[in-house]
Amino acid sequence: MTQLETIREMYRAMRAGDDAAFTALCTDDLVWQQSAGFPGGSTWHGAAAVIENVFRANAKRWTGFAFNEEEMFATEDRVVVLGHYSGASPATGKAMRTAVAHVYDMREGKIARFRMFADTQPMWRAMEA
Image 1 (cartoon, rainbow, N blue to C red):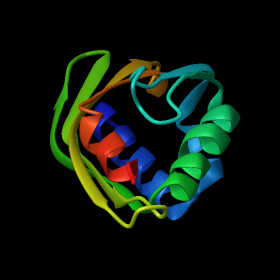
Image 2 (cartoon, helix red, strand yellow):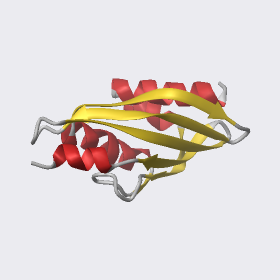
Image 3 (tube, one colour):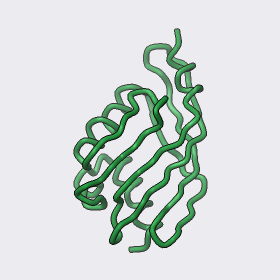
Image 4 (tube, rainbow, N blue to C red):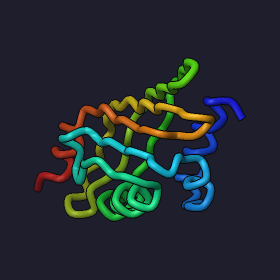
């Protein structure tokens, strides 16, 4: 599987709630870093922590939360994905759409580190009453 195929499969697994497939695509020492200003953002270690504290938390924090890929670039050991998040705050009903970049560091065909860079202001505005 190529680097791009691995990342495409990771997004498929994430959207489908296929935790076993997501876990299989990650190294055991996975580091998942979200932007400091991202709602609930932090650094998580291991696939299980990402599933619970990122994927499940975003599904609770937003109605219809989604990441839409627009462009993907790969090097020997890195994949960069540009896209946007969308969803609505269940508390306010306000929708958001915000630009984001995902950077994946790959090791032996698996995801070893994720870094997210996002314009979080639209997210916080959507959550304001």
